[in-house]
Every structure is written in structure tokens, then in C-alpha cells.
Length: 125
Image (cartoon, rainbow, N blue to C red; front, side):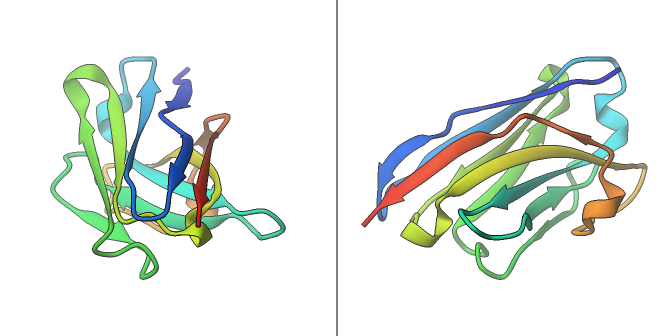
């Protein structure tokens, strides 16, 4: 079974950058859409970005468009989230998740069947 482990979170000042990584075990990583979600304090988990299994298609939430970039490297079974121009409202626990196989990227939480433990991102003002 594939397991997902996020890393790269931390404390950063507003306007700064962080790069999150999600490393996957198993040999079927390349077949799945991968996504990033986040849960801010007191708020429901929300979609951030997703990428198709080939990396050819991406889909991002309006709140992060132009600032966050999702990418993947199937050779090392890793998906990334490059976060630039960070804002205090980006503060959240960020989760990596596995979505549908051989399908376009999706923002629907119910289409993701495997989740990492999350990594904390804190943006100070």
C-alpha cells in the first residue's frame, strides 16, 4: 500500500516562501492524481492544488493561484507544493492526498482515498 509523508513545513514571515514535499512509498504512485489540501485553525479542510498522474494538468484554488505551484517527480515518487508570497491566512496544516488513477486533477475531497499526516505551515504577519 502507498503511504504518504509530508515535509517542509515551518514558520515563515509574510511574503516568504516554503516548498513542501510529499514522498510516497509503493510502485503505483505514477498512476494517481495527487493533491494538496489544508486545514486552517477552526476551519474545514479545503482544497489547495492537484496535479494529474502525468503532471501535464494542474488545478489550483483561486486563493493560491499565482502564488502556489504544484509539481511532481514520478522518478522519485514525490509531489511538491512551492508556496511563494505567503500570507498569514495561508497558515494551516497541509495534507498530501492520493486521488483518482488515470484521471484529471480533482478538488473533491471524496475522490481522495489516501492521506498523509500533514505538515504545519505558519505565516507570521
